[in-house]
Image 1 (cartoon, rainbow, N blue to C red):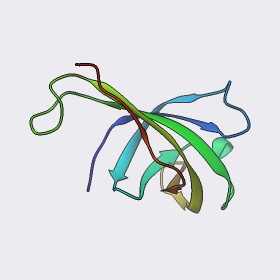
Image 2 (image 1 turned 90 degrees about the vertical axis):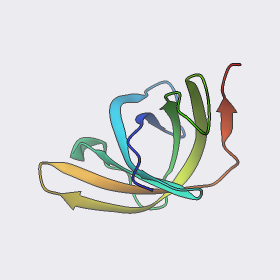
Image 3 (image 1 turned 180 degrees about the vertical axis):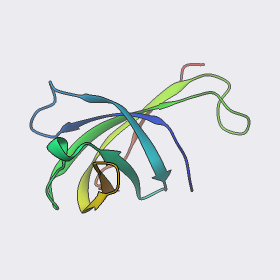
Length: 100
């Protein structure tokens, strides 16, 4: 599904440095695709941790929430405009935090 959500990403071993200002391009039950600057491009197979900010919306939540998890990079491709497209496959159950 084409879904643009704010995203914070970090290398799994460097959780103290989150890269903010990133947006998803596509999100599915098994993974997501997003763009990074080339200097932050991960290697295929690298583990990344992430946190998605989810706005409220009809059909899923009356309030804003967060989804956190980790995944393995399965693809990293150069894109026009000095970006790298990253495909991430989720490797654990996602943590959902939606206040009531």
